[in-house]
Length: 360
Image 1 (cartoon, rainbow, N blue to C red):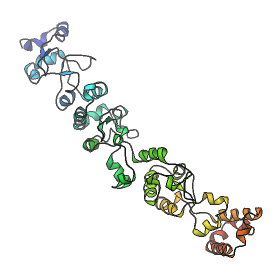
Image 2 (image 1 turned 135 degrees about the vertical axis):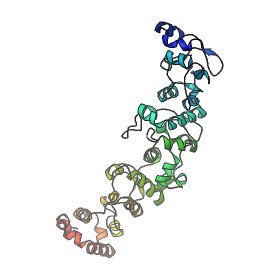
Image 3 (image 1 turned 90 degrees about the horizontal axis):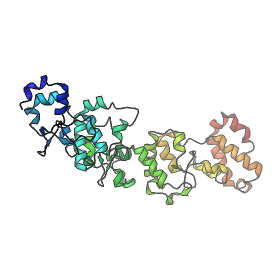
Image 4 (image 1 turned 45 degrees about the horizontal axis):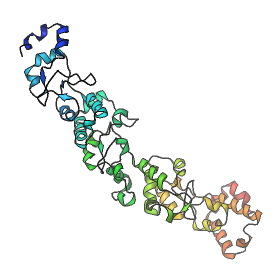
């Protein structure tokens, strides 16, 4: 205490020696030198104020005992040691095993959330990236199975509900290790500019890659791909971030045979499906129920079959003699004539349709 009034007059060399003397008490009552946050491995008693003190307390760096700062303000100021800031907390979470417990991570999240302006200055969020890359890697977020993971490794149940509906778990169950514990939701909201969680699109894509069975019947597919309810929700989630050509590369189409496939499929009427049944064109046609779901999401996902495609296919088959038996069937011919009348205006306006019409 006697040093206090004279601190301003002490030469730098003496201050440097005093900085190494165990003059201060840490929170456990042990005497230590005044700690330096800028020195790795420093075992002194470090300055920290709430809320950072609470967040840093479980770590390996010891903190200055309450009251020491008030008792020796001049000496502490002369020694030039600084208080902990958000960069020290981030560094501690990155390297200190003492901060890898659920309780410690909860305190760290609360501290960061209450110091958002300081956090913004130290770690400016990048709106084009996943918040801030350094913060995004921190294993701060609890999963429902009790693990701690980075934000990009977990998905929020609220995001799944918004994308897939409140009953999303009945359609697409999320592994416990991939789902954010609700205890982290409030902190996730407060820290949203810095932490980006797994998007529903990413989650659905991963499930597609691991579970979809292209070119197999629907009964061989996972439950979320077996019927209209699942198709509509999956397509809606994917279409929010993927354009139709990209989406067509995924196994989310259902062809006229009832198989899950990749590649664009055309929306066809019942007559077109019947007329194309034995033609190669049939492979390009969609299941009518799937097409209806897809077109509600985006008509481009199942575009209407151009009449010329069927006319050309019929003409090619006629030249090969592939469908002579079908052509001899009065019911088949009646279906053809009815379809031609229905699409007459489109056919008349398309030279590529009227040309081969005589051979169909």
